[in-house]
View 1 (cartoon, rainbow, N blue to C red):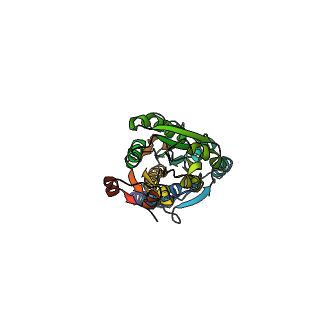
View 2: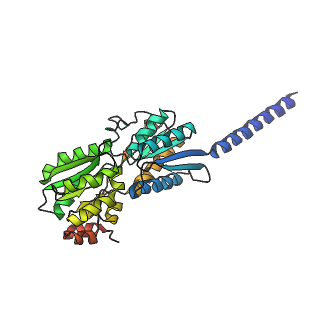
View 3: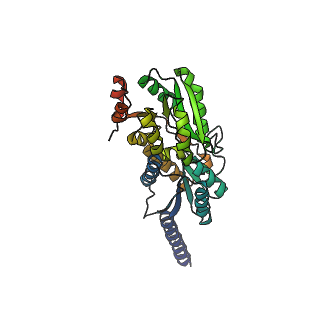
Amino acid sequence: MKRSIIRRAAALILSLVILSAISLSLAEQKSFTIGIAQFAVHGSLDNCRTGFIEGLKAAGFEEGKNVTFDYQNAQADMGIAADIANKFVDNRYDMIVAIATPMAAVSLSASDGAIPVIYTAVSAPIESGMADENRLGLGNTTGTSDQLPVRQQLETIRAIQPDAKVIGILYTLSETNSAAQLAAYEALAPEFGFTIESSGISTGSDIALALPGLLTKVDLLTMLTDNTVVQYLDTVLDKTDPAGIPVYGSEIEQVTRGCVAAQGLDYSALGRQTGAMAARVLNGEAADSIPFELIEESALYFNSKALEAMGLTLPEELAAAGTDVAQ
């Protein structure tokens, strides 16, 4: 009798061990579907996306193994952005990755807390209503911010153009991140002897109309991480180059395309940082328990050909510290 009980107990224990092993194996094999929603087509946001995928892979989540990506681009159109976000929610994806402030805003609205939204390239998460003063998500969200190094940019501009007085800034009226960046420039510019002349636009087609008047009032332009304006950078340069007005970028891709210089952020690194945060959420952490993170180090990038075309000389100490990305 005792032997029979022992055998049954042993069999039960063995069954439990096997079931536990199967459950663990299934958990390890769980696959996630992630919707990647990018607001516009331009180099910095593209780098965020590829960096994000690299960051997830480094954390153990790899496409074709345990992750499926659905990548969509809104082409800087808010209507398309909303459609993309609603599609991801309707499909009940495991996570939405929103690249740029407008995309993050519509994704949070569409998901209404049902799906974690991990954002990147959001310059002002607090001002945009995505996070509280402790950097915690107001909703099922967290992410990374590409807050501009405004002080370093102004220092660079002053070093290159010691006699300049007025900085021009184009920005999109509907982008809260752009309004926050403009306010930062307006607050700091007087310390460096500058005034700011700004012009707000509603759509990319407004840029060609706004620029002629703005260019008569300024010594140079500096770019924000404004998604619409960055997407139309070629239009900006087509107007500024003949007028002899230098344009300073907000990241490396813009300098490669013809801006004279920038104290820029590494958007690939920002994306990898975001991927690591997303992995924490996939592993069970609540998104709104993870404070959003900043990428705080900037680097100087300059375009020697663009500088020469504008008759500008980069001081030796800046040239030694920076990277020439002229093509």
